[in-house]
Each structure stands twice: as C-alpha cells, then as structure tokens.
Amino acid sequence: MEAPDEALPTRVRVGYSLGSLVTGAFGTVPGLLLLPYLTDTLGVAAGLAGLLVLLPKAWDVMLNPVVGRISDRTQTRWGARRPYLLFAGLGMAVLFALLFAAPFGDGGQAGLYVAVMFLLTATAFAFFQVPYVAMPAEMTSSYSERTRLMTWRVALLATSILVSGAMAPIIRDAMGGGLPGYRWMALFVATIMVAGTLIVFVSTRSAPTGAITASEPSLRAQLKVVAANRPFRVLVACFVAQSTGVACMLGGVEYFAKHVLGDAGTTTALFVVVVSPALFVMPVWRRVGERLGKLKGYVVASITLTVATLALSAAPLLPHWTIYSIIAVMGFGYAGQQLFGLSMLPDCIAYDTARTGKRQAGVFTGVWTAGETLGLALGPFIFGVVLQLFGYISTTAGETVAQSDLAKTGVLLGFTVVPGLIVGIALVLLRGYDLGGDPAVTDHAEPLPEAAPAR
Image 1 (tube, one colour):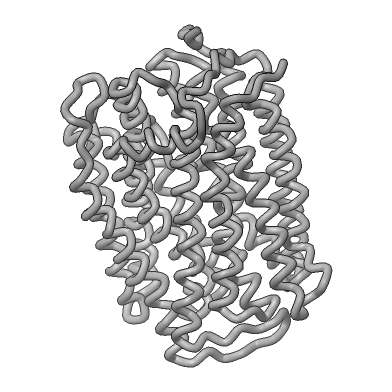
Image 2 (spheres, helix red, strand yellow; image 1 turned 180 degrees about the horizontal axis):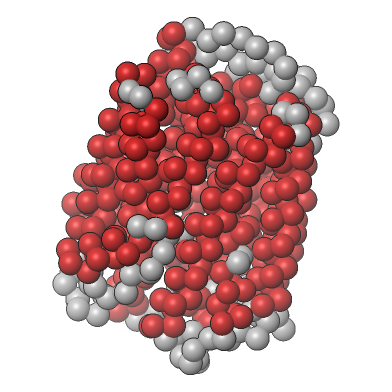
C-alpha cells in the first residue's frame, strides 16, 4: 500500500517540522558548549575532553542503522515511528538536563559522569532522530508535497539552531556562569526539547503512516544493499567530512572568541553570523542548483566554505568587521552544502529503488544520520586534540589561567586551517558521485527545498 498523495494539512506540516526543535537543539548546543564545559569548567584535559565527546557519538554511529530497522518493523496503534518520538524525546530532555547537572562538582569523577550521561542522551536521540527523519516518506507519496513538507522542516530547523545556539551561552552567562550557569542553560534547552516532542507527537496523530515492511531478512543484508549503492556511499562520505569540519569549528567558537578575539562575550555573535545566512540565502543556492545542477552546486558551496575558512586564519591581523564578513561567507557556503547534501539524498534512495525494486528508506536514513553523527563527534575530538598538542591549559570554574601564545595558535589553527582542510575533502570525494544518467533519479530529480540546513 502506498502512502496517500493528497496535500497534508498545514497543521501537520508545521507540527512535524517543529520536531526540529529537538534535533536542532541537541545537534547544536553540545557541539558548541560541551567541550568548553569540560575544559574550562570541570578542568578536564583537552585531549581527554575531546575523547569523552567522541565516544558516546561513536556508539550512535553503530546504533542508528539498528534503530532504523527496529522502527521499520514496529507496528502500534500510534504507527511505527510516533511512539519513539514521544518516549525518546521526553527521555532525551531529562537526560540533557542531567548531563550538565554536575552532581560531583568539578572533581575527578565529573568527566566520567558527563561521558555516561552523554552516552545515554545520545542513545535517546538516536531513537528520536531516525524515526523522525524516516516519517516523510510514509506521510505522503506526493513529490511536490514532500518538497513543501521539507521546506517547512528545514526552515524551522534553521530557526531552532539559531535560537538554541545563540541563547544557550547568553543564559549560561546571565545566570552567573560556571556550574550554576550551565545547569540553568541545560534546563532551558530541555524545555525546548519537551515542547518540540509534544508538538510533533500530537500534530502527526492524523498523518498517514503508509505500509511499512522489511525489504531484507536481516540488518546485515540491508546494509549490504546500502553499501552497493555507490552514489549514496560517496554522498555519505562527503557529508561526514563536511559535518566533521563544521563541528570542529563549532567546538572552537568560544575558544576563538576568548583567545583570538579577546572577548568571550562575542561567542553568540560569532554563532549568529555563521548560522543566520542559512535563513536568507537559500533562494540564491536554489538558483545555482537549477542552473548548474545539484552536484556542481555542492562543489561551489564546498569551495566557498573551504576558501573562507582558510582565509580566516589571518584573523589576528584583521579588523573585527573583516573577520565577521569572512565568517558570514563561511555561513553562506555552509548553507549551500547542507541544502545540496539534503537534496541529493532522496535521489540516491530513488536510485536504489530503481536499481533493486525495494524500498528501505529507514536503513538509508539510519546510515545517513549515523554518518552525520560521526562527523559531529569527530569535529570536537579533533579540536580537543589540537588544543592538547599546542599546550592548552584546562581550568575549573572561577579559575583564570593565561594561555601561552602557542596555545592561542592552536586555537586559531583548530578553528580555521584544520576544519578548512577537512571540509575540502568533500571536493575530492564528490568526483566519484554518479547516478548513472537515469532521468528518473538524476541530478534534477528532486526539487530543491526553499530554506536552510537539515539535521
């Protein structure tokens, strides 16, 4: 049985899209603040802090395809996906608040506690994110309706990223910073997650669920089919490189503000400048995609982001307005990369359906989100390793330590040259992307969404 192809009610489109309050908040705030929380509040060494951020996310990489298969096979009166949205979303909100609760203060057990809580929170996130991403394929089979639904989703996701990422440091600092500030910040983010969870669960109660069947007898067999899809493999590898580089920069925003610009209070401004272009430049990237095609558009976006990131390495010699201008260009390139990667994913799945005659979007989205999760974990880990190599000194709340010039150089390189080179890997990998010329699934098969990045 195919999913209905009539237009979805606006309340369903908007309600589903507001689930991005959950994915946007969790995808942004830990990447922005968890590493500084560990190194500058709990006193955890930078290299170890990066590892503590990496390991729970590495677990998610293995877990996401499994979650996709589990949700593919679930049958309840609420549908296959919605029960996971409710229970995983609420559980994630509670766990996120506990993540920054610091019951052991800044002692030796603090780092271990954060690692365990982050592992549990990441597990809950997997059970929310994978079913959530898989839902549109079952809510409607209409080509244009999926585009309208995705437009709402990516627009609200960009808003969620901007609000949660900008407000989290402000709330932390307004509540006195240190452990109390982080606790209040975590409660604010948890509240956003609860709101998003309840809205998406209630608003999709009347949405079609479609027919959900397993295409292959085992997860291993499904993953073999995914591995045989060469365009999908290439696209995932590009997206992992992109996510890693961007996450490396995200993890370094506060360090860059504090030790390169000399003002930790500019953290929010830097974040806003790099994210906000995604709300305004999508029509530009859409026209680029329509004129050049998605693949060439992806290449142009990758070149833009890579060149701008490398140019920012001259920040100590530049006036602040120039630095912010370069960061805005980075945001422009980042928005294009997100848009084209997201738009090419359905083409790869359509290519697989045409090639095999089977539908298994759940496992494809599970592998996709696993790749993104891997990149988001590797970025802060790499930045932490760079800090460690350049002699960055970790501190506890209330303690002030002057960093050496070598450590400040490490912050600069970790925020600019290192992520720039990583993002540039996508340019090499994209040379292997080829859908074989099938007009049903090639470059222009899926209309481009109107708005900004998805996660």
